Image (cartoon, rainbow, N blue to C red; front, side, top):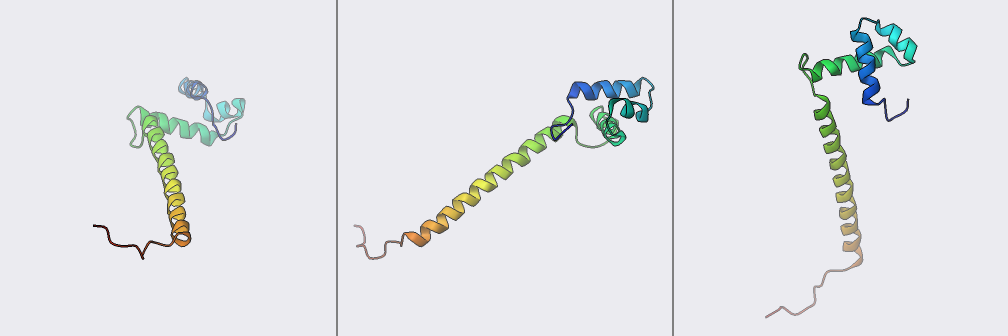
Length: 101
């Protein structure tokens, strides 16, 4: 399906099919998705319902957003550090001026 994944509605329908008694292998074959994907969705569903420990879906989304923001800030900081290095080499500091009164 690509890097964006499957829509939440599709995931919910797959989980409902499995909950209704269909085998994971049948659902995976019929919908042309991997069994491991369905097992991952089942595990995340159990976590979201509080039946298993782990990060809930909203917590995972918040963590991903925070990690993205940290990466942006680190890239920005690296740019500023590099610019500061370059400016330090190009513009000599003022050393011969008179002291201010």
